[in-house]
Length: 184
Image (cartoon, rainbow, N blue to C red; front, side, top):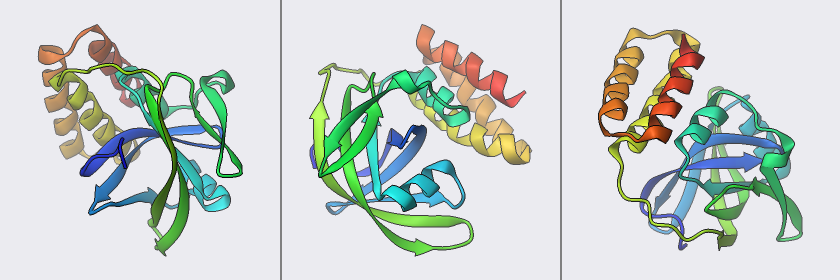
């Protein structure tokens, strides 16, 4: 697999006309995901048995897709393995997977991904940016904080917000402002 690297790869996953930040676990040549039961992403994957991992370097898009839906024109239909899958129009690269459902529990669904197609749309170098990385971490905490208002999660969000303000560029700061508007 060329696009996925060892560890958890943060992508924006598309299923049907749904987009959401997701982590794809890639270890020992095997790609897996753990989904929250009852989420749109889990329901779509269980029904359609495919997912597209979109590699995007727009911090605002991670925040937007964590808390809301994108318009229909944000997606492009791609024929893959006899199915029509949807990817993000702005993806720098994308990888389409068929899905096998594994363990299910009340809280989660574990799935295994099989690569069907991967394409690099825009070859660009993205230097390591601690502000971007902290937006990803703050967004993960914020999606949970929005549901339970756990003060420990708020501390993590505030910690990452400080890094964004110190290390981020205009896009990361705009993403932070958007994130804060969702959790007020």
